[in-house]
Image (cartoon, helix red, strand yellow):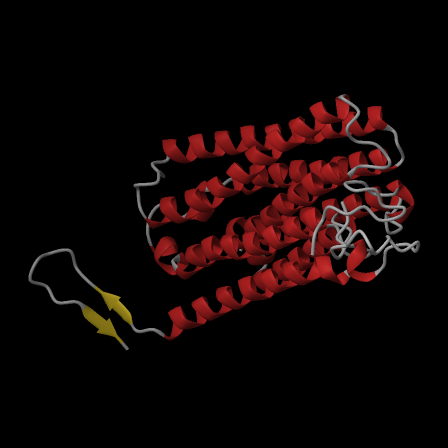
Length: 204
Length: 130
């Protein structure tokens, strides 16, 4: 779907390739606008954590003592790998290699599920350490922030599986891959947010 | 603006493969992943090694720079902003500027604000630290 100005019946479509705003896909632009707003949403959550950081670190438990950096690094690698499989899926659809595109989509969804499993293990370990939503500032700030990221990953996995199903019906091919492209933008953004959370919350 | 009118070479709801803005090759995607992998490993090592050798002040700047490199690679190559129209980049850049501004402003305000210590016992006054 391309954006074009409203044309009347008396004005035939000009026989030239689209240029400028005409080449802008309104659905892709809509996704970029959403991602821009989601940046602010996650920035608010990270800011809340940072503003409360001195209080969090002055109390017990100390986040650096209970957050498993090596384990979370593995989760970061999993998400980075899923970004690679996502972009390879899109490239396959662009080459009209539907079978390969579907396989990469499934691999991306599987890696996303692995990430969610890892996050569930982490939350479970934190709960055993007494860190819950009602245990104090650290629990509230950390679990809300990473929980919302996990929710984004979960939605992404569902979306990828839907794309995989649609691709099986022949909906996506080299002429029409916008659905995969938009879901890919969302997925890469989820990875991008984890890059920020991993550095700002786990490592610093 | 409507999004319903097909134009020549662009049937409604489709993309032409040749219009795909010269996206990177598979080899480039894999190279980017290798770089992301190495930078992430470097982050983990830096976060654990730098404090142990007494270079704590270098931890935050080095990690922030590495995170920025990773973010830029993902946005430019995996999200294809390097080869896409600036119209797509505008909302993302606006969001990132707003997000960074909020983070810096809130932290600065918090650092400038007086600390108030309150004890839970009734009748105890809160103390404002200047």
